[in-house]
Amino acid sequence: MTKNGLTMSKTTKFIFVTGGVTSSLGKGIISSSIAKLLKARGYSVTIQKLDPYINIDPGTLNPYEHGECYVTEDGAETDLDLGHYERFSNVPTSQANNVTTGTIYQSVITKEREGEYLGETVQVIPHITDEIKYRIKLLAHKGNYDFVITEIGGTVGDIESLPYIEAVRQMRWELGRNCVVVHLTLVPYLAAAGELKSKPTQHSVKTLLESGVQPDIIVCRTEKHLPESLKNKIALFCNVAPSSVIECIDAETIYDVPILMRAENLDIEILKKVKMPCNTEPDLDDWIKFIYKLKNPLSEVTIGLVGKYVELKDAYKSINEAFIHAGAVNECRVIVKSLHSEFIDESNVAEKLSSLSGVLVAPGFGERGIDGKITAIKYVREHNIPFFGICLGMQCAVVEFGRNILGFTNAHSTEFNKTTPFPVIDMMEMQKKIAGLGGTMRLGAYPCRLKKGSKVFEIYKDENIFERHRHRYEFNNEYLEAYQKAGMIPVGLNEKDNLIEIMELKGHPWFIGVQFHPEFKSTVVNPHPLFVSFIKAAKDYAAKHTKGSKKS
Ligand code: GLN
Image (cartoon, rainbow, N blue to C red; front, side, top):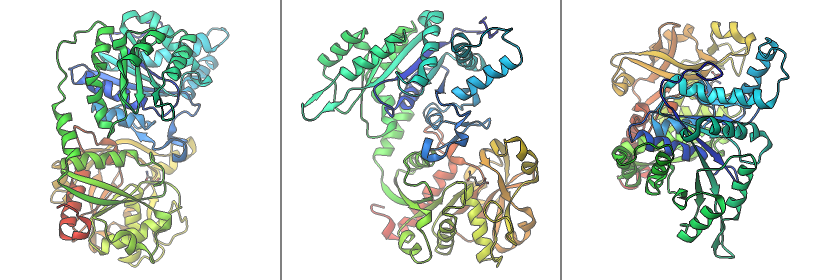
């Protein structure tokens, strides 16, 4: 029993992943790779991200700040690293898997206001650090996991990361052998000197030591192989065994990293530290097959991704990864061509879209770039190019169809035009009611019933599906009959609230708009069926129109 009253029914092992030297070294990918390797050995694993910023969650952060906002089954708006955790481990995450400094302080201040500290002076140590430790243990307690991997956001030495590193120091004391600290650093190659340099790693380990944390394993990001002598030097200066210095060389794809880490024995090093058996091999057959297909495609398609953040690498992370999963299933290389919706108009749409084999119109908020999305949808609808609309993408397809087929002049979503004569997309009554409370979005997984005989029913091979949501606006059911009669068919329904979740266009080879976010559920082991089918349709389209197909 811990101080916070959490009973652990088994001895969970805790792995902390810290980062040094610079940000963007890929702590999320290393954490996900460790999870994959441990899971492939039959252990139950979860991963948690501790983010040192003060926002309560990334839901309010603009994609320029923080890339994509990933949504979990239970409706938490989280860091995009949770997407990697799910894609690699195939284990769903939840609200408890992402903790920010904002949430930590919020709960400590609430407790203080409620008098829970009985007049104590509330301080970073022990109150904030206790709350951090509680969040880590809570996750272990909830899932009864063999391993909890906790990634500490930021870089050691950052002022805002200090309470987290202090919590790691304290947990180390409490947990003894049931705890491993993996420190990820950079070993830069200086072209002028023709050498790999270990000094930044030495300094970042020193910084960690100043906070009382000795790493057990040092993972070195590098663009060139680390010679044995350099590994030995890092081991000597940083107080670890040479076998605990792990090379992490730049990989062709992030999906290579678990295999590279296996080859470097990172999983064995971890298991040895926590005294767990390590004499078997992890089962990575499916993973290896996936990588083979990914790297040896038999054909190629170019898909247009129409959005307003296309210049940002991470803004549509889950969509790009879902394309990779679906491409591998189809043994087809998916080239994603980013198209900025703000720069698409009637005069250039043909030039921009005619050579594509499929177009995905991305989710989003705000009016910027809406006209370009609608223009792109009109073009692909009229030219039978496979179309996939996600959330705002589906809403734009409804607006386009209303304006150009049903003759609803100036039809729009009330998100962009409050006084439109045809509010074909509108805010639901139940969302309006909660608007004053701040939590106005429909978030997380909801059930959806598919219409038998529809294309989506054929794709999912199931009548009942669960998909994740992040939106405020919905198809306006007042127009349902008009759409249905004209050939845009509602084929997915949330029966409880009578909400249209999927629209399909009759007579078009592949035109599907979904109000939810299928990209959040695509993993290496379970590629999302809608993405798989969309790429298959793009392949078929490319085969018929030679311009889009190189090898097929
Ligand atoms: N802005 C739209 C809404 O809130 C769509 C949101 C999205 O694409 N995630 O309904």
